[in-house]
Amino acid sequence: METKVLSHVRIETLGGFRVLRDNTPVPIAKWPSRKARDLVKIVICQRGRPVPRETLMYLLWPATPCRKLGNRFSVALCTARAILGQGALITENDSVRLDPAVVHVDVTAFLRAATAGLRDPRDIESLTVAEAAYTGDFLEEDPYEDWATELRAEARLTYLQVAAALADHCTRAGDHVGASRYCLRSLERDRYDEAAHLTLVRALVAVGSHGEARRRYGTYVSRMQEIDVEPVPWLSRGPSRA
Image (cartoon, rainbow, N blue to C red; front, side, top):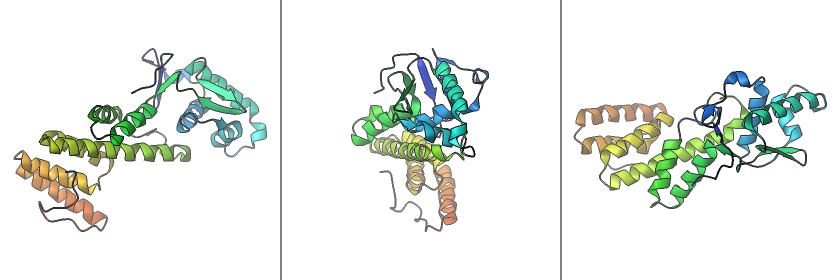
């Protein structure tokens, strides 16, 4: 399910950014420039598509005219190439792209596994792999960078769909503990997920945890009131994973 990696370079972006070479993290001290890291992050956001040089310069130094940035950009690109290794960043037609055959990127692998699992509900293995791979939101340390917003939102929404599918599967199989686990993980990402709240309540009732089920139902009611949604009555039929 993962692209074969020709080198031993991995880039982790879910939950935070770091580069690993031969499974060893590259220390932050090895990056003499934050702009070099940001350049790599921006290219990752394009998922293999080439990014024009001028676009990169504008995103990295938005307050400076591109005609003054040639040397700065060259230094940042050389630094990124030195960290990632030969062939990782490809320059062609005055654009830069990341070669997925050379560098393994966790968000790309996550989305690939998630897409396979969501396309075929019987592919529980892909869904499980995707769920385990999602260790946090995309580039959590860059919450205000516009260039990271789209992929962060897509990855988070995809994760919620994966967790919902796994909760459905567990519920149908009578694994209420498993369903509870996936619902809780969904609610960590979206506290207003009504279906996750209600499936969690029903799963707790199914395993005899009535007090916790009541407490969780109270939390559900509070969350719905926060967004002006009418909560469904206790244990009535409503939005559900099942």
